[in-house]
Amino acid sequence: MSQKNATSEPVFPVEQLLKKLSLRHVRDAREKRGKVIFCTDKDSDVDEAKYCFKYSFEEQYRDRLKKEVRAIKFLFPALEQLSFYTLQIPEVIRYSDSPGDKVKWILFRDHGPAFPWSENIRENRIWGGKAMDLSSVPRIMSVLTDLESLDTKNLPSFVKKRNLKEWLAKFEKRLRGKSSFIDRPELDQAKVIVEKNLDLFNECDFILNPGDFYPRNLVPLNNKIVSLDWESVHTEPAEGMIAYLLMLMWNNQPWQHSLIKEAQRHFRLDPRVFQTILLVKAFTLVYEVWPRCWEEARETQINYLRQSLDLEVVKAILR
Image 1 (tube, rainbow, N blue to C red):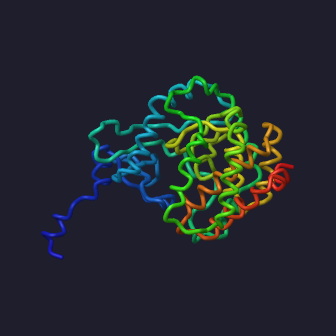
Image 2: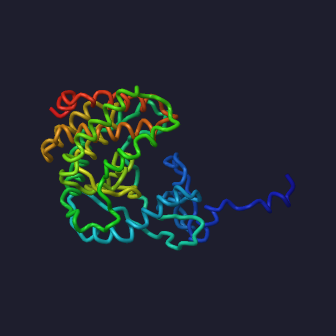
Image 3: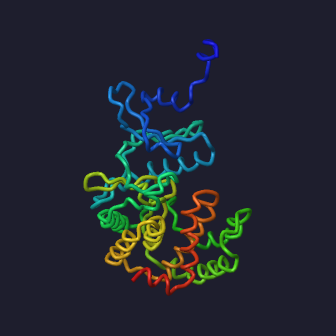
């Protein structure tokens, strides 16, 4: 390559944006998923991450970042005025807020590493929360009780209730063109159970869910836990958040047992509601999150769906 061609090579847009913001990229092992990089001030002499920079050029992901910016602007200020025992809202430094921005981005304070749950398929020794210590259970449950303490009637209008009627209406569309991981009679049975329990689900007390509430998005910080990733903030019964934690910690049964025991101390978990949300979330993980990769994780969620067709099995989980 000639010197002329080398110097005329375009600058990577994110690096260009960081330069404009007086930041510089710091390599970090947590940059596995893309769309998230770690950086520090441009003039810093220390190669240590100070900020977490979320960005996207892609339309679909830009929409998700726009939703998170909406939460930052209209929900975070209200939450930051409240006193929580364990929950801490992530510190936002700056974000893009212009409709014409080609790159959507948010600059967060780097609060440190999250709990050791793994989505790196090469790290099979810690798949499904295998490295999680039982001491994290009461701390995470404390965050759930903080979220339960919020008055959901006073939340911004964009924070919607989980709508299972809408999920049912799109059931066939979600399956279209995807592998038949689960036999059709079992899928139909799951759909019937969700339909049957719909009214019971809607009558539950709904609590605030930041969105993707599981260990990778929970950062222990002193005596607090910072909850990250508010792109899909909504409300749902506590059973929904507890079921999600249970399912994603599939490789750590002692942790799961401790979770249910601790949850029963704080919440009255209804087996039929728990069954309903297990079926919905298992379906989502199988057909929308892991349809073409990570076979081991997907198989565990298929088993959760099949087992949850039997209410007695669900009751046994909650005992």
